[in-house]
Image (cartoon, rainbow, N blue to C red):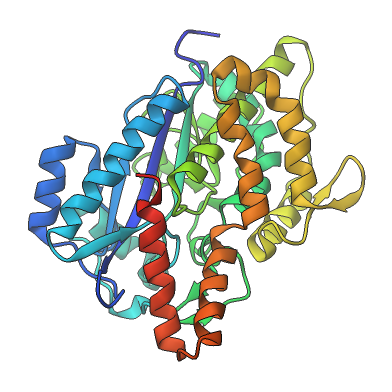
Length: 375
């Protein structure tokens, strides 16, 4: 593999809230200008005016990603504080109403609003994307077919969106129920060559339905801008170190699949119908009810699956210098996903005698605290 293989890039979307009330707040123009001046191209507005997006530079390893992401989060938090606001890294605001939000006045977002109609208005959701450098086009497609198997595992670990408009949805990741209403989402199709991928996506481009593949929003895709494979299924997480643990898992999985390929081996590609069942289980339960182990033919606790993955990936984690980060996945299993922690805060507040609205505000306060915990 080339020297630039397995490099990392992490993108996160945050919601801006009023520090006192926990309500969503639209980003003042002066806030975006301040962030842009300090972060030089690593920050941008998102579809809704209450959102802000950041992206790391190309990082050689997890330690470099940690340094850059910590700087980005700290800077956004400091700039927001000047306006009485705070960022939260969560995929759905616990009680905000999507119907009163406004989209950002940019050509791309105006076109999205026109093309997608009422579906896109509900997009009060945030995600986390991880890019891993794979310079060869054909290898990216080969790895995409195999890596798809692990997407439910990543979703289960990252789940952070149990609430929608003040209601407990019963899901660990409600975000996907909103996102999946858009076209060109979900698990990626199975392509057997780069030429096949280009023919399929090129058809939509030639017909003028999309201008480029940035309008293809699969859970996993070849990046349009970079020689990377971009994993997009994860909810965005409040805790910086948990985000890095997930990035380490994605990086290690990628290297493991390349390692198998070099030994004339590969991970079995299962039917999308079966992988989608695990995707639903991850969306519904997070890490609490297990995923299907297709090889064994059993529903296996997520903790056991993660322990098995850590064992398989230890060689790759040591080579990439991220074993401590990979091991931190067990912290998510033991301490619960963000969805579980949010529900715990809500339950504690109600037990303490607070009404529903006050308990919801406590959840937002908890999310603000967790955003700052690792900075």
